[in-house]
Length: 94
Image 1 (cartoon, rainbow, N blue to C red):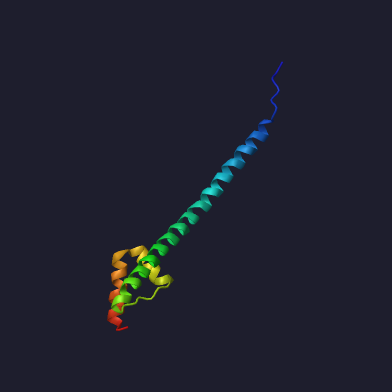
Image 2: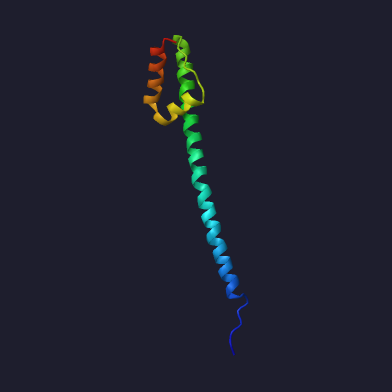
């Protein structure tokens, strides 16, 4: 007497394919979200660095504009980016 399975093989294959597709969709969305979170983190760190520079620079009459572009430059380039912005401000005569 053959053994009767509680679930059909076609149903198991369909569930397996659905799981594979779900995995691929999650992977496709995680990579851009991870990139956006890393970018936001770097911009926040750059903004914090400019804020600290402005706080210390207030004692010496120095101010560097804090906006998304300058925060991103400092966040991605680090200390060289901060020095670049200071040099550009001094060269521009502002």
